[in-house]
Image (cartoon, rainbow over all chains, first blue to last red; front, side):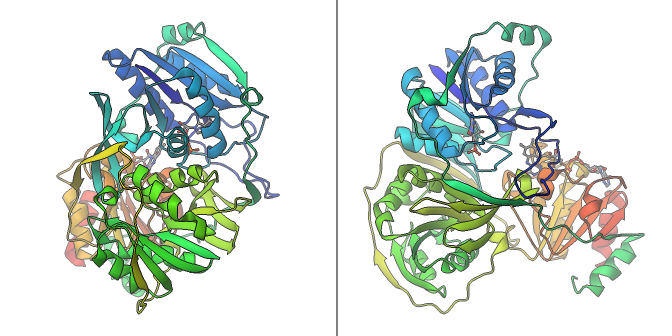
Length: 250
Length: 306
Ligand SMILES: Cc1cc2nc3c(=O)[nH]c(=O)nc-3n(C[C@H](O)[C@H](O)[C@H](O)COP(=O)(O)OP(=O)(O)OC[C@H]3O[C@@H](n4cnc5c(N)ncnc54)[C@H](O)[C@@H]3O)c2cc1C
Ligand SMILES: Nc1ncnc2c1ncn2[C@@H]1O[C@H](COP(=O)(O)O)[C@@H](O)[C@H]1O
């Protein structure tokens, strides 16, 4: 069984972003970039499926600027077998619908039986691509997975939902999206980082696919969120209770 | 303008709080029809919300467990009559609405916090560190509303309830089981008081301290990701960028450092209290009242004196 994992290069989760003063967006110049944390989890899950003999090959795909090569190499250093990079015009964050259309085109060629995506990219916080891709392919979907078992042509997935956990069974081929507790991704070892440099990485351009990726959203402005008034430190539990009483909170 | 708002139904009952807030947001866009995938009683409850014009009730086992493939197909079948398709930002809607959008060949607008006009909306990005104003060119707008930023709708509505149906089971996925957390405490996303514990609490046993304080304050219990990952608290208690977003009157963060991903889920609370033994902890930067203390001393004292 072939498993395909879409991975996105995003701002590192430790970086606190700055909004540009002119409202044109956030400042990404000289900012540390990394693989989207949910995608690391997705890659890890795919590799574990391969290690346990369920999967035969793990293919990673990224859509973005040329620098996404780094992200794909990181995924291959973790253990993915090969990579596909689809380059787009620099600096434009393509929308989940367009990403899903490009991924569908790749999937039509690659014919994986399982796609594991991240639940959400931590830059645009969309939480949409996996669901959209499933729709375009007409496949079943199991989002926000905290447990995945592949058995009898189906993915049995435990999902993190508002009320607790839900388990569903989805016929393969299917899309699964990874939540935080699916696994703990491994660190790539130095030898594996070296080996990853020699693994195959195929490069394509979004134009090769004849897919319309025109943005549907126009970003009017990007602003700082409202900031909070500076608070105070209290010296004791008694003082805290007094403050809460003053505010009518207890 | 005509809006189709997908109600949140959990375990056959209308999730009133989330649905009502999404209706408040939806009424800013046009006449609201609510779609209830559940039994008649849930639809009747939705009909009582003020501002609702009509309720469509799809009472079919295929729609009972929030399965995205079935519900998305049902919505797409109804979509022709509407300019906007909306829902509260619950895990069910986040699962279903992007699928609906792709089937209609439109984008989705997740977690909208403000309606500017019929095609312009504000939404947070980068864990709430930036807010985007987005204008969409799509013919049908598919939107989830972040409930913590909208008020409850009044009750006193008397909308007509009509049965509706779609193709039923698409045969792609099936429900196996639920592990639902039950609690007598108020619901996390609608509680007036939330007491959350983090890694600093140290163990599942000691997490009882957090629960005790929550009970004393009549509040809900929340947790940081670290507390959930460590098994001190259940996943549905996680507050943050990728967990639940809350905005209670009082939020008490105990043994939580205040990572941006956690702040994303609680920084719109009216009053924030932080108890942490590290005075450098970033949580103090957003706290109205900070107490530098060992939680194992401060929390029992607080429980006793309240
Ligand atoms: C993709 C992604 C998504 C994420 N989503 C979320 C999310 O939705 N929600 C979320 O919360 N996190 C999220 N995180 C994790 C986040 O980055 C932090 O790791 C997490 O919030 C830390 O939890 P914490 O504050 O409990 O633990 P820590 O950062 O370890 O802080 C523990 C705190 O407890 C204090 N402490 C220890 N002992 C005591 C004591 N005896 N008395 C008083 N204080 C004490 C310490 O001083 C410290 O400040 C996410 C991370 C990633 C990468
Ligand atoms: N540009 C991209 N390239 C590859 N994968 C992507 C891209 N954008 C989104 N994805 C995948 O879709 C998931 C959800 O992203 P989003 O819908 O943007 O929140 C991510 O975790 C990735 O797995």
